[in-house]
Length: 101
Ligand code: SF4
Image 1 (cartoon, helix red, strand yellow):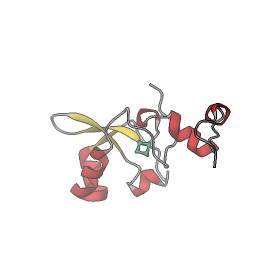
Image 2: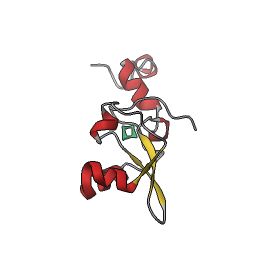
Image 3: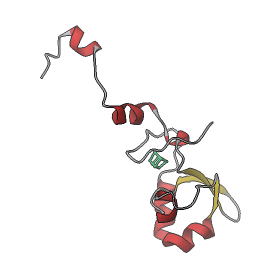
Image 4: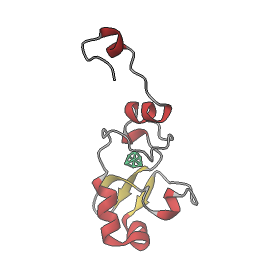
């Protein structure tokens, strides 16, 4: 590959289109990043692993209730959704544009 001391090489990095979009976007810009509303608090999370939303069978609402998530994917699924609740996290390969700040 390239010589690491070569300035021209360093300044001309190429990104594949998909990689570029991953590198510049954050979870908060993603369609699957939603508010998850419980009885006493609302947290943020990612619903891409919930089949109906991940396949875009259903439109992804901006707010999803905890009960809706538990009904679809159980408590483990809810945990998984909440694990990806950092709005500033770098987007993953399933990023879909759609959220405005
Ligand atoms: S970028 Fe990936 S982890 Fe982040 S909200 Fe979108 S699908 Fe979920």
